Amino acid sequence: MSRTVKCVVLDREADGLDAPPHPGDLGIRIYESVSREGWQKWLERLVLIINENGLSTADEVHLGLIEKHMIGFLFGEGDYGQVPAGFQSGGGKK
Image 1 (cartoon, rainbow, N blue to C red):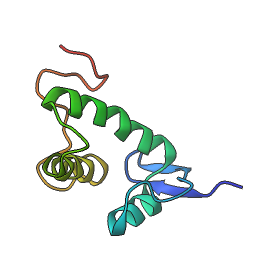
Image 2 (spheres, rainbow, N blue to C red):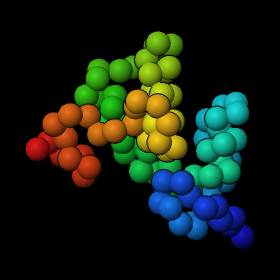
Image 3 (cartoon, rainbow, N blue to C red):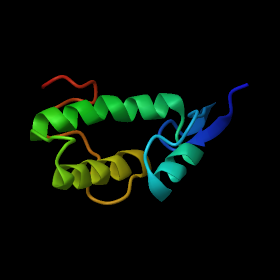
Image 4 (spheres, helix red, strand yellow):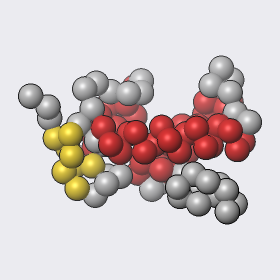
């Protein structure tokens, strides 16, 4: 039986994640308030952010920036999380 959460991304009830997708307190926060579909939307945005900014998940500094984008996208906190300039929300260039 799947669990449901009030997803902060979708702004509705939806199937929850099976486990925290990120370490620490942030992972628990995501697990408790982001749905599978909401997390998938983040992963799609993450690809855009990594490609547009030339980021590497092997670089500690880049990981910190990615986490800021994650918090901005999922929870609307901070100055990150928006679609990079020149892109539409569907992921394609304007």
